[in-house]
Image (tube, rainbow, N blue to C red):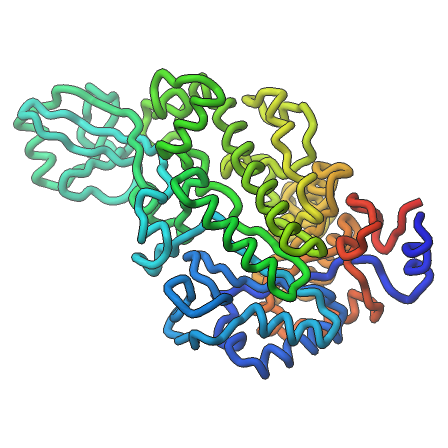
Length: 492
């Protein structure tokens, strides 16, 4: 071990990340008051937190830093935001006064908020919005008209809904029963069905996934990656300690199908016979998941490689502007399905971690680009033993999720398991167990989000669980190895 780390180990200071995230949308009212920010920073530091992540590029892509202009967030949920209020500067100033590291949180490929349509790059430049492959089902009637078929909802004019109800109308051409609005039922009976048709359509996310809150752009859409790298460079020049990437991913399994993505895929992997059916094709049965096509494995790997391409450029951009900056990323803890959003956050090894994957998929792991990785262990059960007692699956606990993330990262980066405050309201004992599980399995903890700590007055809980001992984040120590060790441990 280095003499410096040995010196730290002998002091009453832990080497442990204790990170508190300040989500923009949940905390905006009080963060617009510098006095309340100062009070918050003082309290966070006093109980043992040592780092804050502050959202400054919102879900809709608008910013709370930089000069006044169209890129600034001016209003949100009824709150007017002064154009000269720079949230990043305020938190950096107040956090540093209390010994807190401050990192800027950036929503990467989310550039719109569906609850506030019209605002953000995804709306302002529709050609950048992520393109999604969506199954469609319809009946072609003998009079040349069509009726759409849905697997859920209520019948509406022009839309039939599949059913197992014996009162449903039998459509022999499709081997299913449907419910229909009265006028459609009459047309079916009088005109008759010529053909049952299904397939895939390419639609913008706002049409394909209208219930999704964050509206994404395709990483390779014109100007998208360049815009985000420009944001990284601007943020890196602030007097802050780090940058953290969130939503550095795709909207879902079938997104990222835009023309620029296809062109680059074909350049790297060869031409595609049928787009998007060579990747994903509609299941003949409405409501069932699409069927993977012959190019699916390559396309999943390609999407991960595009994320890695951005991350490599972003890290280089940030550290060129400020070599002292650390770079982290937040990801969901559900590794089994995380490929669906185009991300491989494990270490880069030639493995095929999924049944469909090529061995090369493992080489698209991005953990090695990062100083640290935060994984969302967002489960309301803390320990595996608790799950056993409750008759639940052990995998879906904070403890198991934290252990898995640490194993996946190998020796590539530090892992900080993360908690979701909403999971622990009215369960303070569970919260304590969850904190301990994170600190036992990882190299620290991230708590999402400040609003829950404030609302539930959990300050004393964290003070007690941190043991009254101050801590230094391991990623803040240049000589500390980028791998997760036991709580408070030092390299042997």
